[in-house]
Image (cartoon, rainbow, N blue to C red):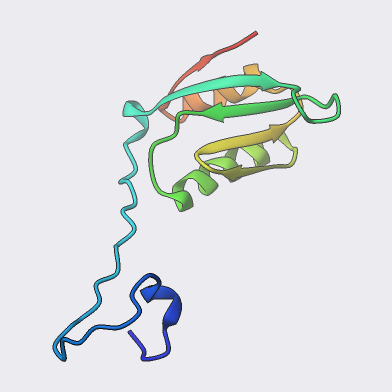
Length: 115
């Protein structure tokens, strides 16, 4: 830790102990479960999207890089855009059936959910 790394030591102003070492909290990142242990749900969503439909994949447990890799696979196989953030994958358009087929062929446990 550098001396001017003030963002990492927020809420600690001063210590009189000359041997004090500020400990930052480590961000714990979940290990990615194998595909056969993942329990994914595929939703169709229209809320707050100006009437556009999107396919949501929820329930992924693992690292952000693995989530992005899975999103990239789904987007390329469906031929559309999308994103991956906060533990869910957003695919533009109504591709629930195709996404479920792709996930099952890749070894994931996936089901359609919602209406």
